[in-house]
Amino acid sequence: MTNADAAPAVAGSGDSGPAVALRELGRAYGERVALAGVTLELPRGATLAVFGANGAGKTTLLRVLATLLRPHRGEVAVLGHALPRDGWAVRGQIGLLAHDPLLYRDLSARENLRFHARLHGVDEARGGELLEAVGMARRADDPVRSLSRGMAQRVAICRAVLHRPQLLLLDEPLANLDPGAADAVAPLIGRGAGVARVLISHDVELGLVEADLVLGLRGGHPDVLAPASAVRAEDLRGLYR
Picture 1 (cartoon, helix red, strand yellow):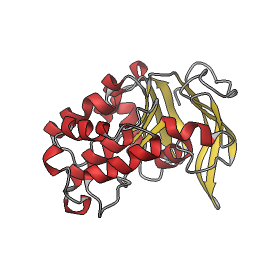
Picture 2: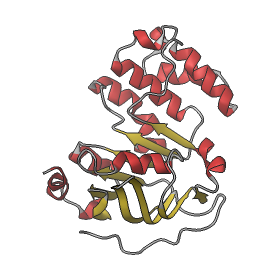
Picture 3: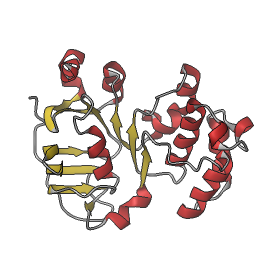
Picture 4: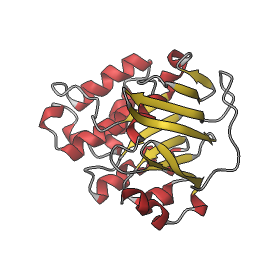
């Protein structure tokens, strides 16, 4: 196991502190351990890339950070807010892109973004601007159920960034996207977005390019934890064997 240099202090609430701070995070589903002993600190504006085989705990970690799951052990802080205690205060600062696009299938792309804009108190015009940016303006008024998976993914990315979150939680964000679509969404969810990101990826090379810090999970335990510059692609491929 490759370890980061120092264990973080998880405390406080408000605008100070790192984007993510974990100390001995643990989560289980009954008898099955999903996460155990995860300790790390992610500065604001930096990217954590998370790797591991199916069932390694990647999605569980994202759901804990998104306030959708309560940790069973350890301490968690997101954007200076302790979880789960201050989950209410941080939800509006998080943008989540999960396997499920979290869109209403019978509503159009535009209607979905209008709904989320009202939830977050955002100018509804921003939804149209985002759809234009990702090349979905021509299909903006079609119901989501009529869109291809790649098109729905582009709309889901618009939803995730609509409220200008400070932390993006991205689970395979380029899934179902062709190269042109991937280029179109890069300013919204790539390094150019200028916000902290937690990125789950099976693409080892791409994940390393995008990352500042790397976490490799095996059976819920941190098997690799180090700056991206200190990690080789081969170190990560071993997680999938």
